[in-house]
Length: 285
Image 1: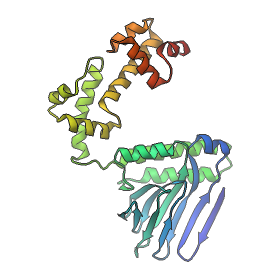
Image 2: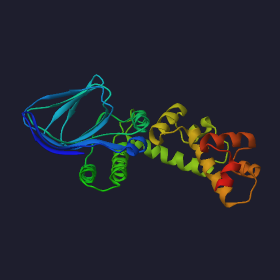
Image 3: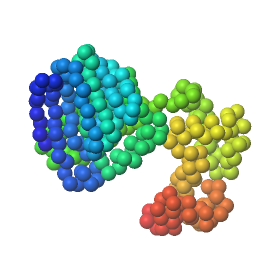
Image 4: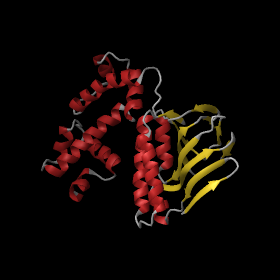
């Protein structure tokens, strides 16, 4: 870890360049660099091919991000979340900006970022009340500055919290406003929660809620990150796990109770989701 105050021609910064432990690199979301900077003159910072993910908040001033052949104008409370393996540039305007940033990585970050993109996340977005993100980055800076022997675990916790905020605040769904979609889908989800043990026909479900089935399929996945069929399967397997652990019912009885008449199919589905067959799950737990 290298903590440094820097004042150059273009920026002044307070940053930590961090070297995580081998354990953290292999098992955790880990820190690479974090800090704040104040631009002193308009300039462009270009990079590419970094094995890193970057999140930053514009605290004051303005500028822009160039990423994936698009340009995003940035102002206070605007945030950036990008995969730095792709070429990018951030450019301060004459209204010299102040940024707070964190570079980080992890074995699961590629999948996390792909999920972020698939659910509508954008490289740049606005957080109206960024205080929580700022506080998390302050916490990361302080933990990285410390001699705490479990600091990598604590940094992992803070980065995970930051990712949770990023995932929840940055949707840009198409066609309808998010509130309208949530209103439509909350009743659909409530119906599925109550009827998941029954045979669910997508055409009938769409008619029940007066929604085009293709539109329903699209916005359900946008909102909940999974298909309707997968959601039903997960509900059934969750119920099955409860029965396997807290009842003496047979596998056949449990399969029927959660709405799957074919016990062999139930066993295959359970193993696909849990990694082990239901009998082994019962024995382990």
